[in-house]
Length: 203
Ligand SMILES: [Zn+2]
Ligand SMILES: [Zn+2]
Image 1 (cartoon, protein in one colour):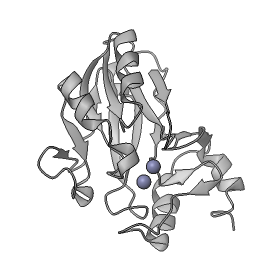
Image 2 (image 1 turned 135 degrees about the vertical axis):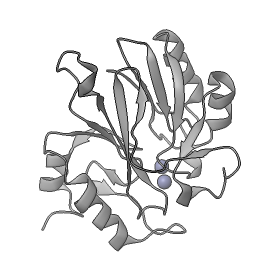
Image 3 (image 1 turned 90 degrees about the vertical axis):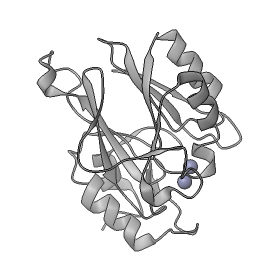
Image 4 (image 1 turned 180 degrees about the vertical axis):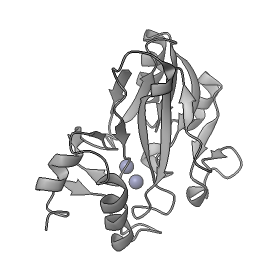
């Protein structure tokens, strides 16, 4: 898996470029003020981007959407419960069909709480692709649902702490302990580490 992360001020929100090393197809996740850096990473890896995926529609995660869409010509995907800003220009995740790029698939998991339409993206090589077993373990891109040592804020419109904790416990903690987690801000962590050490989630 090709994985590039960029984060720039003032928000230091993580934007990602994920690519299939076999086919050079890819996706961009949460293009914000880092959009120039993300587009440079796309060009560097010679990727063809088929989708722009949003974990949610908060400002810091979407300021680069228009530029990314213009540069890449790819559709923008968002959960329908977060549609207020982008109602007319996005496609909505729906049903259980994973999105695909190259030999990888993206499972979209609805994880409300930080905001109504928050989703987590579980990305791994599609095992039916018949390739080597590498990269068949899902990596999670969780937006602002869960952070290393913290959880998403719930004081913004549509936020709810009980809903957020339920999303984390029932959806994210169902993944194996060694699952890598990339949050919308900060460094990567794992499901097991957060289960054991996250002060909002232990006990
Ligand atoms: Zn947010
Ligand atoms: Zn954020």
